[in-house]
Every structure is written in structure tokens, then in C-alpha cells.
Image 1: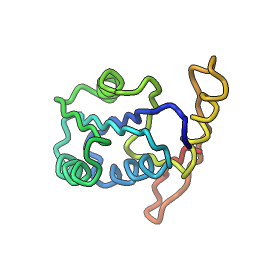
Image 2: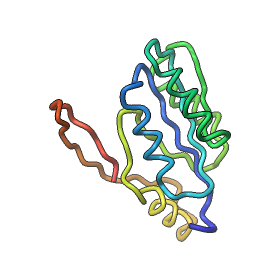
Image 3: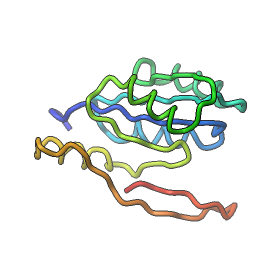
Length: 138
């Protein structure tokens, strides 16, 4: 949507190579033209660093990867917020994914109502074939 403010999506992660790609893909699929995705790898010891290298090749400067020693999810999220390029920041956990259009709808509200400083959405928990529960932000 033209004219909407830019947004930085902050994704803290730790040893989530198995699901992190889906979170990143769902952020980039939002249809927002001025989008930055900031992934903070909180000291992962699995294949997360290699996955992030591949995503950086694909997305270039639209994806910022920060690597730090393990300090916990809150510290990783805060570091991502500090390093975000845009005033508007959206938070996405590395084991979640967004439905298409979710971020566009939120940004439209921020554009129409300049006094709105914070917005959030509902979520839906679904099951997978493995019996795990997955949360989809609406």
C-alpha cells in the first residue's frame, strides 16, 4: 500500500532452524513495500546461522541479522528493537507466522489514525500433523 509508513519486524530466535524460515517468509509476504526484517540470533547452536545466511542472500538489505551470545528472548527482542530502522516495530516470534495482509491492515490503521501508537491482533492456535500447536497471528 503506497504511502504507508515503513515497519521493522523483529524476530528473536534461538535454535529454531526448523521453523524460523516460515516466520521470515510470512513477514516478507505481507505486501508492505518499506519492510525490514530484523532477526536476532540469540546464540543458536543448531542450523539457524546457516539458514539466516541463505535468507540474507535472498533478501539482501531488507533482512538484518544480528548474532549475539545467548542472553534470553527478551534481550534478543530488545536488541532487535534498538537496531530497527523504522519507527514502527512489529514483533514476531520465530515459531509463529502471520497470515497474508495482517501487517497491511495494522499499518493502514496507523496511517489513518495518527494518534495510534500501538496496535495488536488476535491469534489462532492450530494443530500440526505432529500434534504440535502453532500460533498464527491474524
